[in-house]
Length: 238
Image 1 (tube, rainbow, N blue to C red):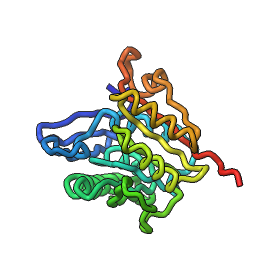
Image 2: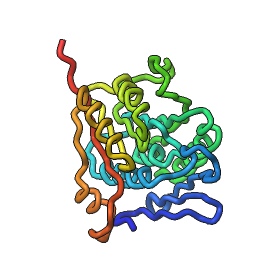
Image 3: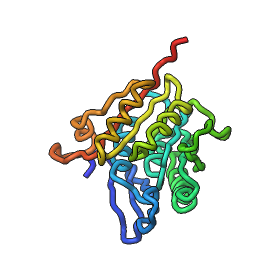
Image 4: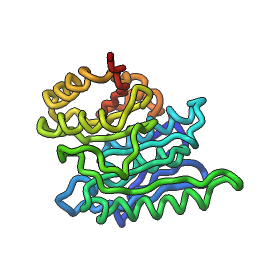
């Protein structure tokens, strides 16, 4: 269980519930019976969402004017949490995932967030867009980098994806962008190759497991199976 205002559960209809506060619960639709792993909520998305919620709650930055993009959003939990913290958030994935789960989850939960927002507060803003970052081309014109925050979970699970993903981060970020990548270490070689590829153009910091455990769990003995890395683009020397 979490040590803050968050309750996670999946009901009999496969709807995943994430309680943001006493008045607001997100309802995330899944499709666990499909062959597309993007239609299921994975542990990395849950842990990274919890971490980012805690991190941004303690941030002194004014988030309403900040923009966030999520890569490989899947069901959209992490991106919707970023939106709930006040960031103008673009959630992206392949067209099939967008049609199956993502666009409905964004539409429904954006309505929930705005119904429960404090009177006179600015509305929450989120949108779902198609983005295949494995295609070797520049980011389409409807995306407007640099973004203030980039988040992603379990986007790199094979060696073939690494160069595409790192290229996409480069296109979407500048030296001020804060990037957070959550993943499960299913294949240590893939993870280490990804980290080394990032180090060429980014400063890479792994969030300590002890810190994650302290922020997320009441019981310090709970095992953390997810790793979160914070990246920041290095300045280009002209």
